[in-house]
Length: 385
Image (cartoon, rainbow, N blue to C red; front, side, top):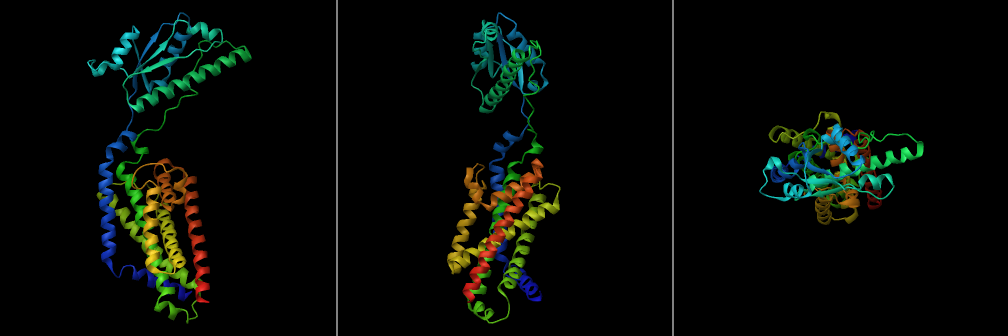
């Protein structure tokens, strides 16, 4: 136990012996957060801000009552009213003009038009295919998506109600409701990370995965150099040596990550949530994973230089696959990155409140750590033999 504690204390102190590389790495990460957070602020703000209802014209030429009933329910629905603002137009040509004419005043412009054909009710009552036609002008992609989603959901509910009428014989011609099918999505800014928040988390993960360098150097020192040859003659067991040294490096990495959190909180006003113990656990878990991966890479290559080269590749690849440089989904490849699990655990804790996801991804990080640690110890025993 004393041997393990001594190894931990010694390795912890060693990381702060030469502070120049540490300061340089910290300053680089802090500058990258500032640059990326500032450069992509508009893109993130457009996703997180509250959306104004989309102005949509409507023209009902239906000769029956179905079109009128649908419009009445659309205008009475508070859920749809949060997304769509319906404006009456008197003709198809007027709708085209308001949607596409650049000379129209901003307050009069519409993003599209909903249109009921003259025989809409007749087709509906005769079980013939009938559609609500929606025409969109030169609108943004977001507005177009909102319009299509709202009306796809609404017409699906109407179709479902018609099936109920035929199946159970219940007359509900004026009881079409979209309330069960359309829900307001959480689009408030406090529920979404800003660009600065996102890149602070991403760069924290990159900063922590850099700790793989510590693991690589420690294994090289203990097993590949002159000091390693001396250690082999001592009664110190491989697992004691490994656990002690790795624990010290993990604590050092955690302390550095915590300092980066405090720094970005004070200077950049980054949101790190209110659950400090869980935040600390995620940082510690990511640190352990990084150190374990670094030590494994060195033991596999049996060479410090080649091990460090692989560490550099892992750092860049893990950050890229997790969307650390550019906000994008890498599909199934992201699951190869430890950064992704750390990043998602943090964002789930801070913004979505999905604690099950947070705890699951922490467990996955520890699986990385344990597997890498076991393989490293096994390889070290072979080397010692």
